[in-house]
Image 1 (cartoon, rainbow, N blue to C red):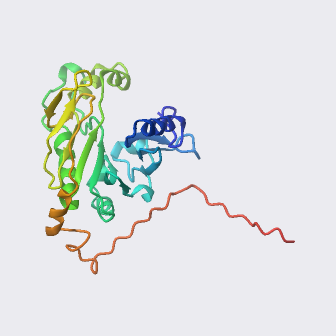
Image 2: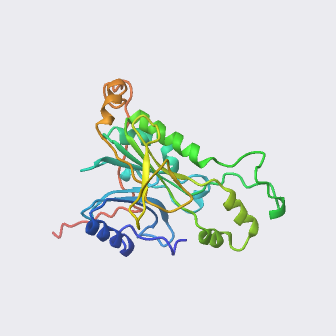
Length: 285
């Protein structure tokens, strides 16, 4: 996987930045980032790229979740930022970080009104108790992780607390990818096939699901949907940032509804490097 990971300033990201500028769009992209200072150190990262090709936010997931620690190193606070864009103040957290109230509050306190949360296509927390595919239970006694409910619950909580819009974006796990990672094992293939898929959807500033739609690229026909799941596509929704105001008149947890004299949160946004060099530049004898 280290060989398949990419640099944040590498050719692949440069191509995406160029395309964003050419077609005048913003891009939020998650990727496995490899460090310049090591051949094996990887990060679970996300870039927010502006429509003029500039990198607005480069975030590395603060803490890999459970078995992710076998692959990715912990990130730092450098990416806990909100980008002030023509479309709103946009922030991002990766997967399980959306469970972390301190990370979420950090974005709220910067005026975030569009929150991007990115999720894996599956998250099998339990392997069914079977030694072969014939013994595999389709409904195990202890059910596997409910991606849709767990992800929406966390994102909705953030939307309600921040009075912001939520954009949940889930990856897609195709049959080709399952074949590769299962490496010929019928049992592992079945485990992955039965794992619930994550969903891509929009939430409003109360945390409620929004009306969304897709557009057929051939006919331009518009189809109303609640979310996308198990398929690639582009999901659309109309956002009115004025709707972020009313809720804050009741509960503005970073302003009039907060006790800043009682609570004091400090965040270190230093980009961590493995070494700091100092040099004597005084050439006098």
